[in-house]
Length: 174
Image (tube, rainbow, N blue to C red; front, side, top):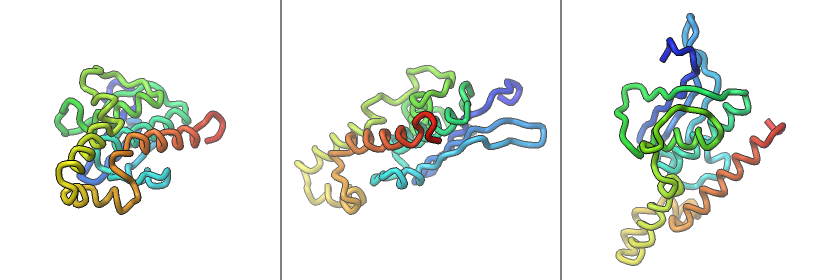
């Protein structure tokens, strides 16, 4: 990766957060050009968890917009020692960065579906659980409900956050 002399999109995650950085390799050490953390999504109005696939997608999208605003374009993905699992949060972040305009070589088959990054699977599960066991629904989605977000409305919420990110990084604004 270092010999390619291309910037690297570094993706790291914990159970609660996803962090992305664009790094350039220099003789004295790596230089961070841009970064984004899923905890930043709250400043755009994000009310859901910050460690799930939709949050990883939005964090990748946020980083992609930041890097594009700095004139960054082509780069390579750096997943570190993490295993490459099809459809994982790591690849949701990659999808977000690509959707934001970065050129990162990848096979589309490894990316999670548009429905998954859009939270459709969470909304569908919430609807089914509410019908089957309202008490379990209240426990399982207590974070969403305490943030005044119905889990069934998550796909709409994701679109709203993406629009706010777009508004922030409109041409000439940042």
